[in-house]
Length: 185
Ligand SMILES: [Zn+2]
Image (cartoon, protein in one colour):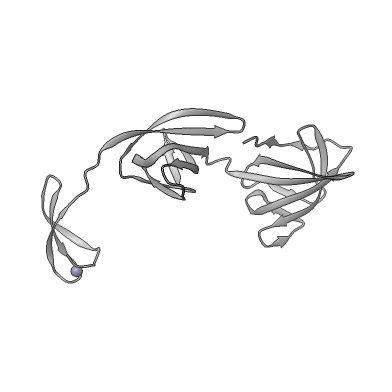
């Protein structure tokens, strides 16, 4: 078999295929991998709630962190894979649990609140497109705060969209602001 990937199927019989390379013309036999259907456990997290589901797939299907999956017509990001071996990807048959988050809430904001003596750190969910600006009031976990600084992927910015924010620095405020859901994982 040559190393090209563009081919024509001349004959097909079950999982056996006779292929002809479109690049060099070589003709060769190929056996397609048998797809053995299995079910794997997936946990979908939505804010503080999570639910366990069974996902229909095939043994050799590779899942990868960051990949977008469609389950019952809704899209989810693969957030974490608990498998035999640690890593960014795993085959379905080696996966214990797949952790998913809905596509519409993939951003977790890291927030540092400056206190009189020290700092508090929070993780909060946000829509990817939501804009945060210096001077905005936000509230979470009973703290009212004002945004002092925003560290975005390309440095400090007066304003940035959530998906580009690396950390938000706040101080306490007397005004209530828009409230954020805290990520308690
Ligand atoms: Zn070829």
